[in-house]
Image 1 (tube, one colour):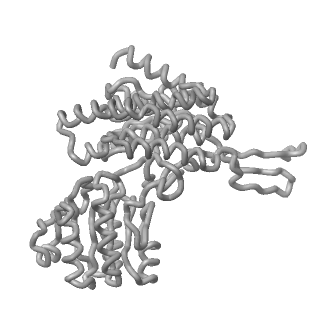
Image 2 (image 1 turned 180 degrees about the vertical axis):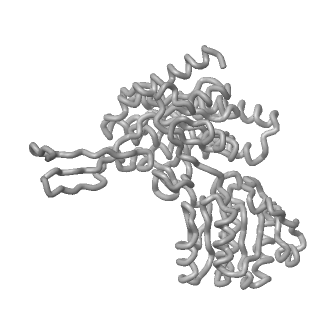
Image 3 (image 1 turned 120 degrees about the vertical axis):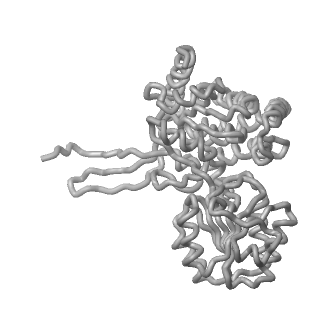
Length: 421
């Protein structure tokens, strides 16, 4: 590691700390002005953003990036507009800073309030998807945090173009550019420095990417980590499922976008489901170009399937591949999810309310759905604006990580001369 790189990264940390001071106490109207101006700049600079993305796409294709990862990397008119709209939706959200979370009075007269405050400086490390640059920056800005972004090397040009638009928004609100920074190098050693905290400048690290990225962050980080681990999601078709709902939900859950973390990777079909419906569901998937990998029961019922291996139940494909297993009742479905899942998102399709409630209660994942596609695992779909990721751990934040989840709290204690005996 060069001294120049360490100097650059530490300077980035110091600048972020100064930016955090500026945004911490910024008025709601000021933050919203910056977000709306950034959205306008993204629309104005759409041509430059798409041109930069075209360069990234060409380089990624030449380097053999998979079709699923290319889909994550690709920007078009619709996705650029979605970035701009996402910033506007974040601006429209209530300000999470300063919320009174609880308040009580002690017998001695002390008035104690728990109040939401910004975390400080957040480092976000992500792969491929350049729209995360806008989403993450917008969420951090609204929640009063400075952010240091480190996108994947394959999306470097796209992220830089988006950063320019974001900083136009900050300038319009007279906020310092250092509130949103991008690691200016693709050198992997820079990630190591960020994980060490840049001389105590970084308060939280959020990784958003595959297992290898998250594993590295968890192994090397010297600051707290809010992990967004893999999305090994399941859809369970119960014996009391409505056939049309089951067919529509399963196809959408897998094939709407195969490269997102909310895509179903394993389909569990109850032994009580009519064989004809099972075949229809699998035919629907195959017609959309999905490869089926089934257990013995599925393979016998649907010879077009390939045999599933033990590893298939543990695999997040992020591609048009689906492992399918027949289970003997809801308890076996829950047990399978507990054994193989990543505690991300699971769904049950059924018209039996008692079965649905058993599934909602019994599955220990961040998001559990009844009669809805797992692809709703998205902060925007939850009405939270954009999101940085889906927290799958059990500390601080779980599920979609939006503006409220990017705050912590402090206690404001008001007295009238009390002293402790």
